[in-house]
Every structure is written in C-alpha cells, then in structure tokens.
Amino acid sequence: MQDLRVEILDTLDRLQAAEWNRLAGTGNPFVRHEFLTALERRDCLGERYGWLPRHLSVRNEWGRLVGAAPLYLKDNSYGELVFDWSWADAYRRAGLSYYPKLVSAVPYSPVTGPRLLIDPDASAEPVARTLIAASLELAEREAASSVHWLFPSGDQAQRLERAGHARRVGCQFHWHNPGYRDFQDFLDTLTSERRKKIRRERRKVAESGVDFRLLNGPNAASADWELFYALYASTFHRRGGVPTLSVDFFDEIARTLGDQVLLVQAEHRGEVVAAAYCLVGDDSLYGRHWGCLHAYDSLHFEACYYQGIDFCIRRGLLRFEPGAQGEHKIWRGFLPHYTWSNHWIRHPGFRRAIERFLRQETEDMDDYVRELSEHSPYKATD
Image (cartoon, rainbow, N blue to C red; front, side, top):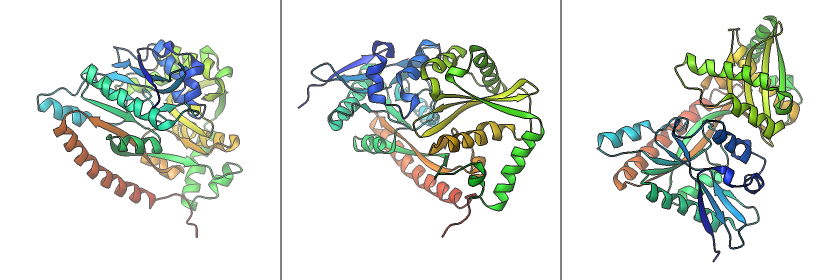
C-alpha cells in the first residue's frame, strides 16, 4: 500500500511550476501552472467572482508530487459552462443551500482535458482514488453540497463515474483535420452548397479591405493585449455580462506560455477592428474569446473559425475547438462532439433525483447529436 499524503492548497503558487507541469504535461495549456496561476495572480478569481482555490496535491512517501487536481470552492455557478442553476433553485425551494460547492475545472474555460493530474511514473489507480477521496473529505470539511468535475477527458469521466460521480453528457462542435494540404483541400470535402457559402463569407471580408495578422505570445506586445482586452470586454458589456479575465492576465500568459498563445488581429486601413484569442496545444487549437470595434459582414466567422482552420492546417494540428455552443458552426465544418462532467451530490434524495434527470438528459442529448449529425456539411463517403 502506498503512503500518500494529501495537501489542500489555497494558491497554486505554493507549488513549483515544474512540479505541477510534470503532471499536467504540455498537451493542454489550460491545466498548466502558468495559466492557472495567472488567473489567481491577475484578479480573475477570488471572493469577487466566487472562485476560491482549494487545489489538491498528493505526495508519496519520498515527498514526490504524484497527483494533483485544480479545485475551487464556489458560492455561485458563474463561469462553469455546465449549467446547474435549476439544481440550485430546487435546493432553495426545498429550504436547503446548494452553495458552497466544490468544482474541479478550469475557470471560464469549457475545454475538455485532464482533471486528475497523475505522475506518469506513478501507479495511476491509487493516486486517482486518493484525489477523489480527498475531494469528498474536503466537501465534508467545507460543508459543500456537492463536488463537480467539469469537462474531464473521456477516460477520467468513466473513472469518476465508477467512483460514484454521476456522469452528465454535453455537446460542442469541433473541427477535425485528417491531413488537409491547404484550405482548398478542406473545402473540397464539403458539399457544393457549404463550399460556396464559406467562399462567399471569406470573399465579403476580403472585399471589405480587412487583413489579418497572427501573433504568438512572444510577438504580441502589451499594447496588443490592451487593445484586445478592450474588444473582449466590449463583447461582454454589450450582452450585459462581466469580463472576468483581466488585461494583466492576457499579458502574463503571453509571456509565460509563449507559442501556446495565439492572437488573431483583423485590421482595416491600419486599424485593428477585431481580434480573437486562442491557445495552442500539442495537437489542438482552442478558440476562446473575441471582440470587434466595427461590424463587418462575416468577420466573426473569418476571425474565429476560418483563420483558425487555416492555422491548424498549416501547423498540422488535428483538432480545433472554437468554444461552447453554436449550431451554426456545423455549416462551417464543425461536427457535434460529446463532452462530459461528473457530479457527486451529498443529499441522498437530490442525488437520486439528479441521477434520474441525467439519465433522461443523456437520451435527449443522444437524439440531439444524431439529428445534428444528419446535417453534416461534408460530402457523403462510401
């Protein structure tokens, strides 16, 4: 039996980046130490937004970090993108409190990736069991109603389900690269109607005189991020939302993540009129936020989808995840893709009710994905 010791961290700065990243790897930039600590240092979390760090760390008997999990104590459900407002409302109507709750996630980032970070040289099963058990013990200590693991990888979702955390199914729209030589090669796989529509949208942007410049972290100056932040914040303000990411956050990850940061700038007559921010993994591009100064026909599609697809093809990336929701993405080459979350509910009655709800929701989601798949923009193949 391994002698494993658990520690709860109220800031990730208590761990060295090299220790955490040895477990997190390079494939998914959202779980890297640089990204998560920038959120903490740059006023994106904390009591103001209801994200209080309670990260788990597990060391073996020699003091080596063998397991970790990003974990937060929450007093709301903002910034999670797995919607449980109705669960909280049901608790309230029953005279119970749904908050606080514990959430293992990357704040504000609906991106699938590892949540149970495990040393590749360690025995995975006991470390995973220790992390899951530690989350439940912490829930008891914090009087949390529940523990939620948002957007885990498929294998980890199955592991959590085996450990008694009900699995919830969601859907996003992802683009896949089978090895396209160029953008035209991608277009050639689409139906005539969809191919013409994309060409028309790209032509409208080009005819409006908008050009594009792609910058990675080292090439983007602080002024670029100040401008991007203004565009990003304006998008939230127009919709009555709150821009939780700060300009200092963007500036920091540009320095610390380097080539894993991508800024797409749209320029008209020398003025930046729109921009999109993405992160780059080992084999995937992740689109996150965008903003625009002036409205141009089809500019959103070009900046947020087609520039990303073209980047993936040139870089040989296998997948492009442009963000949550948006059935309109199907017509532009993005197909439905399952996502998962796992949920442990302390109250037995609510646990059973939520499990019943999730079983029905899964059936509905399967029907939804099947229906969407029938509208693929790609040519039929034998």
